Length: 198
Image 1 (cartoon, rainbow, N blue to C red):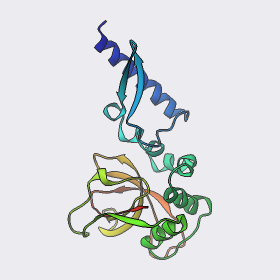
Image 2 (cartoon, rainbow, N blue to C red):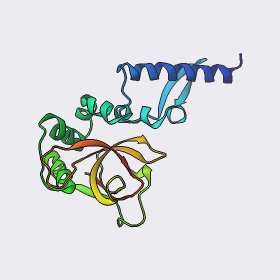
Image 3 (cartoon, one colour):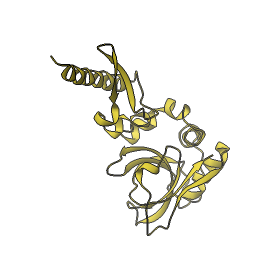
Image 4 (cartoon, rainbow, N blue to C red):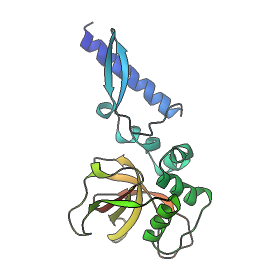
């Protein structure tokens, strides 16, 4: 058996082990790791996860569904101040920020004690941000294709499918409803502003 074939087989074996470990909750792919070192024939070969794992396996808490992300309290608690605060307000204390979607995100950023810097700014009808620009915890303005194409404010959590720009976001439904924030799957093809905590 040649070295190239044995290296490929070792990569496949590691992928199976990682997939099982993530599925069993023994390992979480929180910080979007790009690589894992694996020993082969006294060399260190690098398994590039981005080549073999789908977006949902390389993301925050798996990012497979709203339910799986919501259940991953540890991921939120060990993340940055914005996601930790947003999760606590939405699912622990169930804080209601009546008003608009913007008001909810603003309240999360204020309670987290962070200021924001502009990463990308455009208009609702034009020039949209690249998917690579988004990071967990970013405050985004995007076209809400699921509700009359209105502008919507949300907090980016993770990519469910980056190629199709399907993401899980945290937001408030708005319209003065007396409900806390929630997680949703959002179509982020129309992100026209990105702000990041400093």
